[in-house]
Image (tube, rainbow, N blue to C red; front, side, top):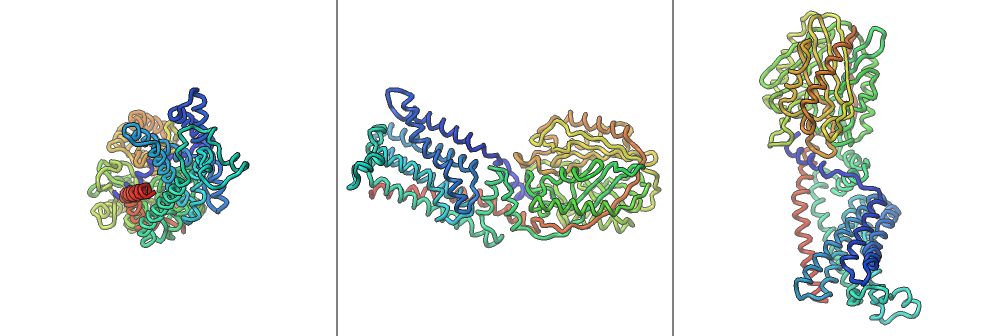
Amino acid sequence: MTATQGDLASMSRYIFRAPRWYKSLAFAMVVAAVTGIGVFENTFWLEDLWQGVFFIGIPTFAASVLTSVVDQHLGGQLTPNRASLLALLCEVLVVAILAVGGLVALLTDLSQNFVFDVLYVGLASIFAFRLLIVAAISQHSIPKAAIPASIQTAAAAILLFVYSGTLRYMDAGGPILDAYLSRPEQAPTSLGPVLPGDFVILALLCLLYGTAVWLFLVIIDRPWKQSLGVSVLDFLGGFIGHIADGTRELEDFFEKLGEEALVPVTVLAFEREDGTEKARFVLPMIHPGPMGEIGGGNLPKRVAESADGLAFPPHATAGHDFNLVTEREVDTILETAQDAHDRLEFGTTATESVRTQVGDAKMLAQAFDDDILLVSTHSPRFADDVDYAVGLSAAAEARSGGFDEVLLVDAHNCNNGLKGDDLGHVTPGSERSFDMMQAAAKAAEELHDAPQHPVEVGTAWTETDWEPREGIGPLGVRVACVTVADQTTAYVLVDGNNMEPGLRERLIDALPDDIDAAEVMTTDTHIVNKVESSNQVGEALDQGELVELVAGLTTEALADRERVAVGMSSDRARVTVFGNDRTETLASHANAMVSMGGALAVLMAMAAMGLSMVVFLLS
């Protein structure tokens, strides 16, 4: 992950789930009631409360109930939960604007008319905000999005028209119209100063603010369409849908960006003497991202559910360019893994493991018949993802040493989160990439002619009591102990995204004395990145408890050892991934949108406010 991609990943801190529509609506009514008590000045506080619910809550109720209905009728996809949350936010915004306006009027010589001017600005502001959100979520044109976006403002204007008695200033009416459209005697006296021209001003402000929203979208959308061929509204709509309702709309956006790729999927299986599966290592060369369960974020769990034995899905040598665009692509990966498993040819021997090191690159390697398992780490130096091309090159070096199949794991077990400009990405042409290739070649050379002996394997695992917010995914911690001759090698897999510096060494040092060699791996699951963009193993949980747990599981795995047959096979899956440089381009555009878009929005708002003052002065 590059620094730019790290900035994009940090957007995951904004992720939340929209409450159920009735919860948002209930809270909106409470806000309206409390506001009524503070604003209206009747002799009895219950009357203030009722007037607050009526004059402030009714427009929110109308927007909450009608917005999703109207939007979906127009072909949109705004859900009731999102509509209610949006209505609540807009109500709070209007109340906040009115509170500021009222305070200014109280501290100055400004009249009640100023408060109404502020109210019109507030109603126009929530129209603009709703217009932006509806256009982003439902992909409507601005004119079409304006229909559901105007409901809350229109409902407030209708109430204001009827209960202020504005009809009496117009050359219209009659007994029926007066009965239904003019009820000033039932409203607070503070609504008296409203005139027909005020509604013309409100309409002009809505037009002005709506134009500002359209111009804002045109400006920020231009670079997205030129370089990526997609609209920023696709990204905003998908992101809002994901954070508010957990929908898959963001995957639709990623699918438009994606490129087809062939990725190797390698399976290493251990089979008991009775033919049942003891354990299975599955390594597709993709990246389990981008976040949460979007794309391949939940790949490790899906792999575990598809295996007959205890599954070990470690991290492959691939970065964010090889994120799967949709969860549907995981099915293709699993089918390919099963095809590779069905072609396994089992042997009964393996070599003892060896460790090689070139520069910062370390390899724990073990040969199984004519195949080889390699686990790479740079610990205690920081490292993040290993580029796809680097992994292919390192595997090719191992094959040139005389092996048929290569399962190359990126242990992904030491990094400093998202700190600094260099996040440890191992890229082609870097010194680290050549160190990895040379370490792989050296390991293959040492194991090519090494004696092989029968294999024993023992496994143990626990889901743990930790949750994703504490850095541990649903697979918990898994241990496989492989005994060949007089040597036992422990492979520890933690379902997390990288690891705090020094923790890998603590875990290995605490293993039982019967362990001669060991490596600690993480799955790089992005389930743990729903809320935190980093959230590495050991960052939020007690490291001492994890050390004790791993040591205990390793003892269980040692006691579980039994004679097994072993086989390795690989196949290629044709999937759609983010694509070369697409992640960096997307990250750059998204980061620019966040940083520059905020400033642009402020400038647009200031310009709109300035023009609002002109409208008020000329009216």
